[in-house]
Picture 1 (cartoon, rainbow, N blue to C red):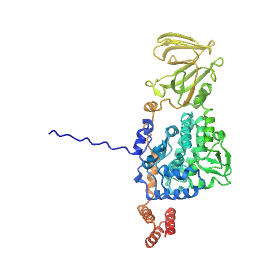
Picture 2: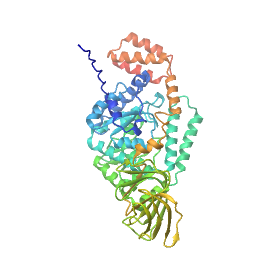
Picture 3: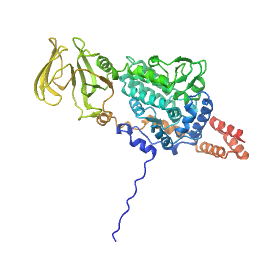
Length: 534
């Protein structure tokens, strides 16, 4: 009989692998393996110390979804949760979680959130910064953001808020601020960082913030997110409840935020114009009536965005940003590039539009419905506003109501050569070879490329995956700062606690050995807690 081979079954994907597989490639490259087994005994003790105290403190002060939401999203209090445990639960809520390192680019974070994906910083804060850390960590990202997702209305808001942030137009200075914040968080979590390094990192952030020429849409979107999803209160103005992740994950902030030292004001669009300082506790917080109130404010914010307004407003926002954004033209064509000039028309051409010509610096990506049509065009692109028609091929002349007159030769679908033009008799300095588009209106102009995946494939910095050199160095230093002897003590303490009723002689022996490490305050706290269990 012929021998038949039984095919080896393909291993089933874990919940986290399924979450990663659903991501587009340009987002997957920011994902890192959590490596749950690499967390040290002291790091698990950090988690336990924070979560036990937070759940006790927040049982009466957090939103009603918080305590039940921990279990509903796969988060326990005794040890750092695994992403697989979280994803098993999050899938039932229409969400998922993936591991990242530190501060990822804002556009990546907001796009993930708009897709219903939590970016979970795989690292955990050091025991020196157990009360509060400016760096993203798994306490903040999981125990802070995940529990309130159990409330369907809030979960919907978080996605919508992510989309608004993703569509917002960022300025070139916003990138400098992001890099400075990322640097500061790395330095502050590095146990070997000197006072001089911390001082320089703080000065860099102040300088980057001061370099902003104006408040961009992206900055306003980040402020809205900060004062709601990160540091929001909800309910009665006199006795509000906590729902913001920054408050839910910080022992210091959770206690401080409800005191009279912190002003409480009703939530309004003013929050998008209110600055914040990530290096200190907040002196003022905004209180939403309920989660429907969040949508009211978000809708008001979206109404100010180029994404919704398009027209002259969108062009001016993109022009001063000096960054890559995309225009949505009549008929659904999308142009990605940098807006470098806008020529006004004689008067209004359409509601909110009095622009004769917009000029974009290359490379230019042409797309429809978020899908790139071809390889990027290396030169410039022009958008002439008004009604008109171009021949499929050949010479053309356009006399538009805006006062614009253009001549040239069309050689491709949008490609023109020998382009010349004037406006009401005044000659225009135009590229002789470009892409030319006609559109009666400009319905939308939004931040970033229309097809982020295709743009990333051509122009993304693919060396910037996972973590940077400084972040890796800080992680190595944190691991090296824990001796094997101290790690062993933490393990023995955990074993005694799990035994429910600690052995007195063994506990006393551990206390004696721990006296050789007076700097390990967390170990002393763990031992003191064991005393109460006897």
